[in-house]
Amino acid sequence: MPQSLTCVYVHIVFSTKNRVPFLQNDDVRKQMHAYLASLLKIYESHAIIVGGAEDHAHILCSLSKNHPLSKIIGEVKRNSSKWIKKKGTEYLEFQWQNGYGAFSVSSSNLESVRKYIVDQKHHHKKYTFKEELIRLLKKHGVRYDEKYLWE
Image (tube, rainbow, N blue to C red; front, side, top):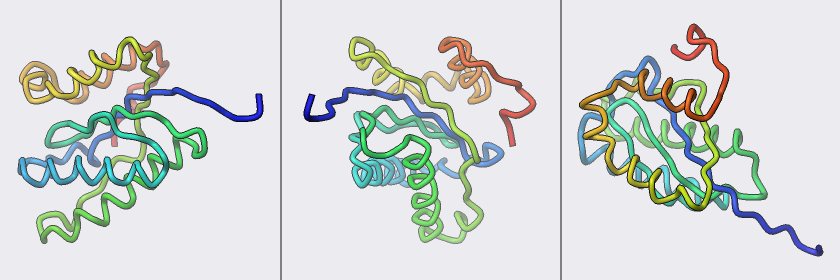
């Protein structure tokens, strides 16, 4: 085959460092989500939806064949951290956590993951981010040691 053709979808989750609720302001959170989506475009990864809560973000996107996932996430987090610090003194200490969770999504499950991300506000009335992440890790069969999940 003379060309590389891909169709890879991924659900990415990461929190603010120590889950500090920096994204409480709805307007700033929406701006952050839009900015995260714009950063993905730089790395040829199309955001289907970006959402989350006051202390974490969820991204559902198609993954570029030309850039490794770890580089994309690292650059998205680095640039969005710089961006939000310009929003005001209350954001000067903003940081994302070091790690992330990334889960493959089949084309047939795109809509259910999209709805899951849209429903974050309601979802977090029942579960904390910690509970949510552990559920995602278990659902996807990811091995983990809980003492290394949190910072």
